[in-house]
Image 1 (cartoon, rainbow, N blue to C red):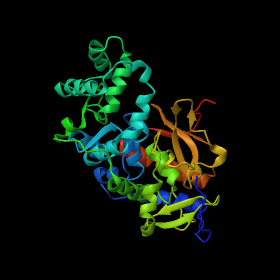
Image 2: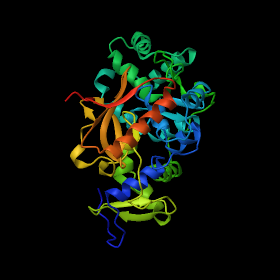
Image 3: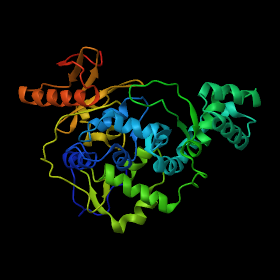
Image 4: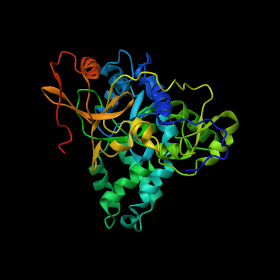
Length: 373
């Protein structure tokens, strides 16, 4: 990370950064926005699994019900597509194409991992054939492997399917992703699903600059490296430098330069932060190179075991435990001692979440083992 060259820049410590980021993430105070507007403001929601986007919005929006997001997915106003960090996200229809273009270099890097299995494969021809296949009817990755292997029998079938996903913006069609529904992961192009006649060209300077401003609105104050971590990209400093005259500049306690929108909220560090139940892979935890604004150093790594991520409990704005939902209980594994007053706040928030997402479900809220350590 680049150290600031302006020692006079105000210093923001971890708690100040925490409160600023929570305010933009609607985690200090729930927002009255609907699901579509919230997904747009947040630049998408991690959607590796079906349920996390719903839990993410339940923690952030006042009066949220699963039908708000589920209905927008069914209406193709929100889609599930691989974009940021080459991972699956729920985006608005407009953002899915724009951010797919922005994230294209990350997908090309992912494709590079499979080059050995693609020897002799014409990738332009592969993309054209894959487009014909998925636009004739949605296909699973297994179906893509089979169909593309017929054209390139000597290539690695998995590499062929990954190449199709990397070269084309492919969305998961519903009913996959709808609340309370199940469905196989079937893919078609974003253009076909949305009825768009053309897909955008690779993001130019203006598109990248817009993305920087929107990222800061949702995740700032932030460094260049922070945004690169969020997007899975490199070489974003020129965009920050173009925008520097329009931005406020700060530094963290290590002297790393931070940028922000001048008018963006930066609440007092002592602003109360209520408990919040976040899903696994929530972007709050994945969108900064330095995660100490949310994850205390002593808890680093506690929300993961290998490739498995656990659902996270925020207390006073910071990661303070894990949680899971069983048939009988909302089970919470705190990382430290919790006094009676704090536990009452946590239990009340848990009951509110259950009422929003699982109305009528009788469920105890109790302390227990989540990670099985």
